[in-house]
Image 1 (tube, rainbow, N blue to C red):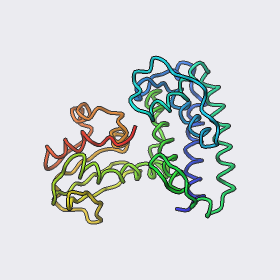
Image 2: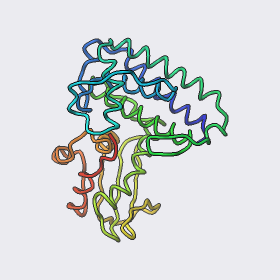
Image 3: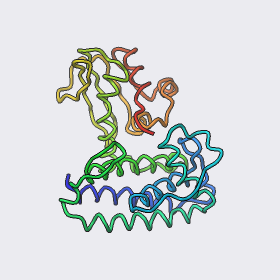
Image 4: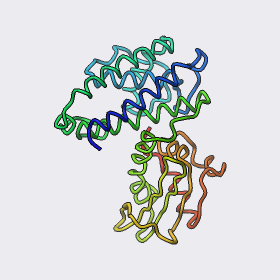
Length: 270
């Protein structure tokens, strides 16, 4: 996928967020989400603040107070942008989101393929502009889904943006299985991710490391059947693993202990 195709995805998810939020009531803007301490409005404040920072704008001169949910430096940095906008109305936050994303799109549309391949800093370390946009598409989709669950307006779980985001989550699963869950050599794991944006992901452990393999084993050590939304929510820590298993949102066949260890360790981002 070339740079402008990635920008197409970025524009799609931003437009979806705009359409969703344009219909929110004042009460819905303040609804709590699965992110501790954050409302629906805070989710959009975070996205607006992040894109403003990528435009080179300095962070607000602001020190948040009473934010016990902040656990690390990244969270503290994000909270500055979010808390500074808390006195705003939802419509004011949405208006800024529209302005900064429009500026970003204008810049993207004027970029050459060489610009997309240029080195830059991403949340995962040094990479290219293409790498950064891939991450930003997924991040925007995750926060859109946070808002949708909070206000009871499901959507955007199908289509190219959802497929892209599920693919990004899938990339982390070999590490989850091999390192975090401690699957031993020779173990095989299949994620059967259900839904139009889903996929079947097969992982084999060799030398203590997990790697994705093309062939789906006939009798994997464990198979986890899970829908797209639950897969993403576990990956970004929006669901409690034990409660998810008790609720039957993950169907398991094979090595139960390994399957439970995988579900318990699927969180790899916040």
